[in-house]
Image (cartoon, rainbow, N blue to C red):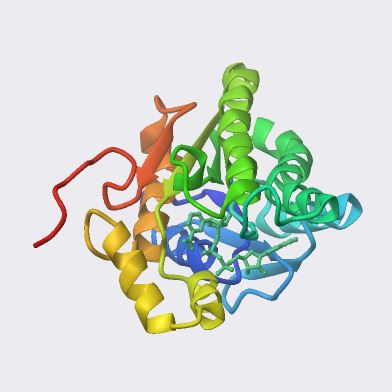
Length: 247
Ligand code: NAD
């Protein structure tokens, strides 16, 4: 199979896009460990860690590499949201969200790189967002973190090119995960909010986590050996298309 012999670590692998990715990579032959605050379900090797805690990240990456016998693929997917304009979040919240969404990728990558260098055909795939490339209302802090993720992806791709490590990212549009369920629960009218989110997608529907997982698997695959420094939109056309409104 495509991922036979490939050892993959997926952060945020206990839920949503990360869990769908862990499932797909395993289905295609990879052995998979999930790093998350929460335990990922069987059969994945669950390593509990907080990506904001360098010591716990180092221990978790070591544990995963030990259990899997090395690492070939790292999916940096753990992330949190934030709502509001620049007036709405205080400095501590800015630091907290950057700590998870950006420095989290730095910490896990730093710990994984020595293992990835030994792979010979390694890939890092970061979960970025449509928020990196489109101005969405009430998402100042979140968008700033994802813009940083997209730039970091390019810089890392350049740094590790000659070490045989490809670095790419996926830019999902609004994806139907527990994240969105939580967002809808907080809305005044959850049903109307879901209709509005669907309508914002040119495709007329939210992205499925399995569709993002398929893009991550493509980028992580040894078959994509010529693809690095690429941001792959999985957004139902939201970034690139300007269709006429539906009748
Ligand atoms: P989710 O909430 O279902 O899953 C996120 C996972 O990350 C959870 O299991 C959570 O425990 C874990 N996590 C959060 N903070 C962590 C920390 N400090 N340390 C370790 N693990 C931590 O969300 P999702 O929708 O699957 O989101 C996954 C990624 O996709 C995020 O980076 C998010 O920004 C990105 N994304 C989501 C959407 C969307 O609409 N759902 C759109 C674009 C991008």
